[in-house]
Amino acid sequence: MTTDDPETRPLTDAEHGLLSAVLDELVPARPDGRLPAAGRLGLAATVDEALRATPPLRAMIVAGLEELDAAARVRDPQGFAALPPGERVEVLQQQGFVLPLTLQVYAAYYSHPRVLEALGRDARPPHPGGYEMPPDDLSLLDAVRGRRRWREV
Image 1 (cartoon, rainbow, N blue to C red):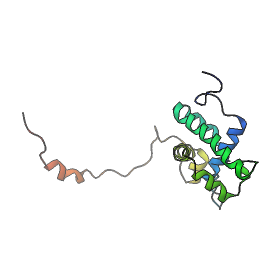
Image 2: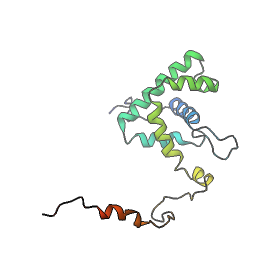
Image 3: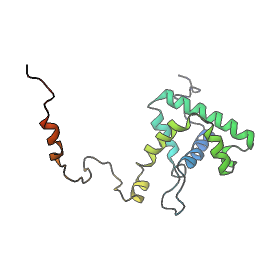
Image 4: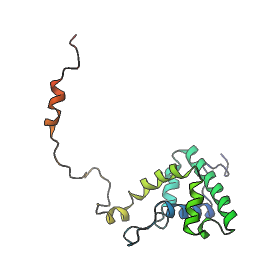
């Protein structure tokens, strides 16, 4: 393992900042301010930590960030964050890493305490306390129970 290995090396400050800007585009703040943008919520580190569990996926996303940065700098030498919002979306749509990254971002975002509280949920793990669920109506299985789909031996 080298420190240049994209599967294991820490994100550089520039990559971390770029990832935060990308997260803000993938999950922007609500106009009413109730829900913050994912990058401003500080989820870049959380997402990177989750990606470490799947090193090839992390390597793909790190490489994608490099390609995104290069594509953005063609439009503006200051990079992705300096682009107007419409151009950011255009550049992001050309990148193959966005969909797998989006799945990681959603998992981190919708488990963050501030987001859970804004959505009216308790900022705690679902278990062992669990959430209230209505009792099951097991009579819905009566038709299935009445079918005989096996044979006696």
